[in-house]
Length: 138
Image: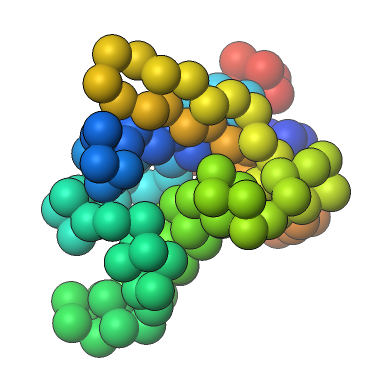
């Protein structure tokens, strides 16, 4: 049975110049990654927030084709999660409970800033294939 809570957690680490160092996207309930946990890491690392917000998933997909429909879907999800969390961090989206990204935490960790956002996915759970055994859903 698929998880009933399809909320995803995006974690983003920025360096002192507010360039993306790394990020991860995983499910809230079981902690499993959404595809590769950092699918776009090589493409986004070292970029400014404005650069990342200006990127289009379709341009990435075209440059890395051929992509399967699943790969395209995952690229879209990762871009949406990272961009939405950065817009909240920058004050361009509210980050409330009814928004695509709920601001969960922003913290300094040494010289890095760690952002955590909860990504709301409005999909009927019956349409989502199970990813494997999930102790919270059994």
